[in-house]
Length: 142
Image 1 (cartoon, rainbow, N blue to C red):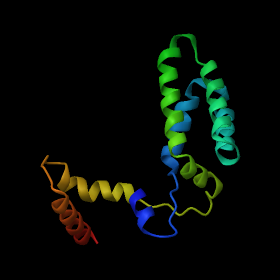
Image 2: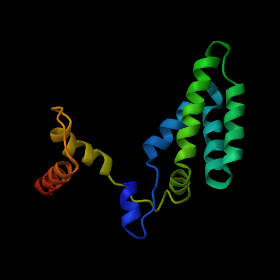
Image 3: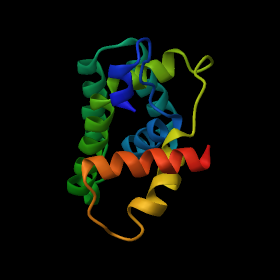
Image 4: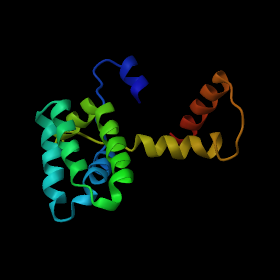
């Protein structure tokens, strides 16, 4: 999908709502009654603030980790923070334009159409062979 952005003028990446919510939940799951408030603050940071300000909020969330979860919780929070930071502009596009973003099921379709032939029975594929079988599967399902 990111490769298509380089080839087709005018496309932009928008993080899907499922993955954005998944990582926001991972960042705030230890907050108990304050989960909704923490997620709201994180969304606001993604929407209107900088990456540094987002990271400051994550650091505050680390400080709120329960005593027995500090090590595993820190790893979870850092991995979730890194995911959102690496998809920052796509996450921001999701939150800024959520009413105008028309989603697609591209990931699911790719998985269904290609995995049945490409990975269910492990095989070695050349680049040329991969391209041909991908086109054939897309043609068949279209």
